[in-house]
Image 1 (cartoon, rainbow, N blue to C red):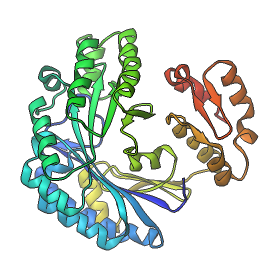
Image 2: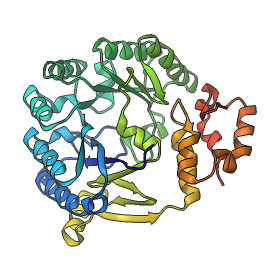
Image 3: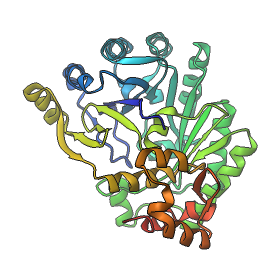
Length: 380
């Protein structure tokens, strides 16, 4: 990845309702803070833009939470502020995450006018019953209507998020969910397995024996059926959980997976820039107080040791189906990949978890299933 490519992430930690599986820094019932929060985000932009005055922003990602809980006008004002503050590429990929219940035709029209050229819509399931059990408040029809509005207004890059391994979800229902998404002819599909994160309602229900999730065998079958099925429909799997029509891969997320540079703005946002990493306060009030007192929302910061940078490049890059470019690794770290990891590569090849060619190393399907174990071999 080119060193000059820079991603910009803006976090919107507000939700109409908190999903039962979500451990992201997002909160419901705090809408009264939204205007003050937006002012704090602009104040943080005023500070962090000084760090990247000679860098061009290639991607902007508005994530959450639910960014589209804000009005179209507020979001348009923020995007204008960002473009006035940073050097944003004329061909930048500009994504906004959206929940269907917060979208209408007028808001989508404003977002399109503001420069948003990629929508990421949280569908999660193809059955209203499963959507409701996740704690979400939209329906499948809401998703279909949102996609149609977006198409009518000229959006040509739409992602849908789907989840498998849900409580009481069958393999047939998962395949039905995929079919519903494909029926909307979307460009990109993210398919995530449910993870029970500590502290979430779902985690507590599982611990109490009240969450009937599919067996590990069924969950793995859902995953293994997904790739071939979507590939037969014209999608390429380019990352463990992501599929795209040719040329429609998410450029912003590729920055993460290639361990590139990005700036995170807002409560709970993380940044990684030229060997330094920092994270902001997740609590909205603490974030805004820090901005008001110091001009920055940073809670933690560190310089990343070079050996940690190498390992993280391996860890993230092996999520990609194409794997890790040997050339890019050498250009970044000054030595070929095998200089640091020859033994790990040879052992994993013998275990049929890793393969390599002249250009890259990459996981086999078996390695994808045991990625955590694979990474242990690369730890210094």
